[in-house]
Image (cartoon, rainbow, N blue to C red):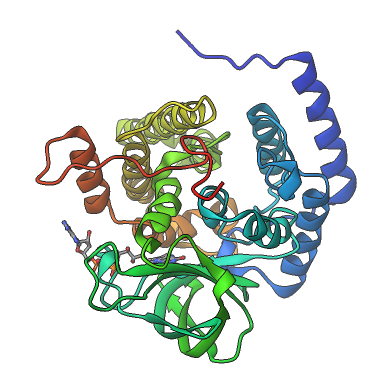
Length: 407
Ligand SMILES: Cc1cc2nc3c(=O)[nH]c(=O)nc-3n(C[C@H](O)[C@H](O)[C@H](O)COP(=O)(O)OP(=O)(O)OC[C@H]3O[C@@H](n4cnc5c(N)ncnc54)[C@H](O)[C@@H]3O)c2cc1C
């Protein structure tokens, strides 16, 4: 049995509106680069403006509440917008939106208005500052501190591997407020504007490119109103952020262009006058890529459905995050097996396959097994939530399962 999406008349009409907007606003030769981390300044500035215009329509974060700058729309609208953006290869907002659910769940009314509106309307961008040199998988081991001083908090320490292709307007993450406090109850979660005196950004170049930052905090002052949740609740607030990062929101639409590119390559490429798909090794590897990518789509769609219908999630988020991290590496390896050295031609070479995107996948798919927790950490979370681990754990509150901790 096959699945087929059937769109309602209302969805079709909204799709026409979205398509008209994108077609009129973005010329067909304007698209994000093959390697997202090699975005030039002109393309960055161009799409920042497109994002602002989408934000003004509520299309950047369609399902977020209107009063805080979101679209107040349905999951169906989000799906249509994402499909249309993917069709035109329009990059997503250059912002790490994983803080948005944490502000909705843990923020005061004043914080929601102050911080959500500029982010949801696309006026501002934010980066996630969690990891430290000795606190990646074991995030609770962070040692950067925030000390109360009058009406301010004074922040010291560093964060690293922070994803962001330019400079943010806001950073967010946990800092130790009570050095002698119990683990998981010794930190607060701060929203730190950028620029602020004492913050320095240094670009890191990893195998995936120059997309990460080392950030140093030297006596950085932030007002007390920038603490989200209580001064010992930072771990719990961070858990809401991580719940989403671990796949707990799923995806309205999971693009499959990597596999489509590979299938087109197999279909259209001949060696010695013979289609390469005749080789059983090529065929079997290509089919495995297709199947694994479809499993990913189904897991993401299931999670999105669970999220919007407010079903309680346990292992589901980490299951799809684990699958995504691992199948993308397997697919890159199989792609290299099929293409051989052609998989390594990048966009600067004479005739790279698909503009050089297979080469990007060879590097990127490995590096991106790390953010938000490695595959081993995803397995740990699944075990805890299946009740087969030393410790047991429930999913953190998200906008789908909690309303607010302050209201
Ligand atoms: C491309 C990229 C983007 C990133 N973006 C961000 C960002 O925007 N913001 C941010 O805060 N951080 C970011 N990170 C950091 C990322 O979250 C960490 O790299 C990740 O949490 C792993 O931490 P670590 O690198 O310190 O490795 P470690 O924690 O030192 O782990 C090393 C190895 O040990 C394994 N391991 C650790 N603990 C266990 C365990 N209990 N059981 C079994 N195995 C274990 C790990 O799986 C891994 O293989 C990014 C990293 C990368 C590579």
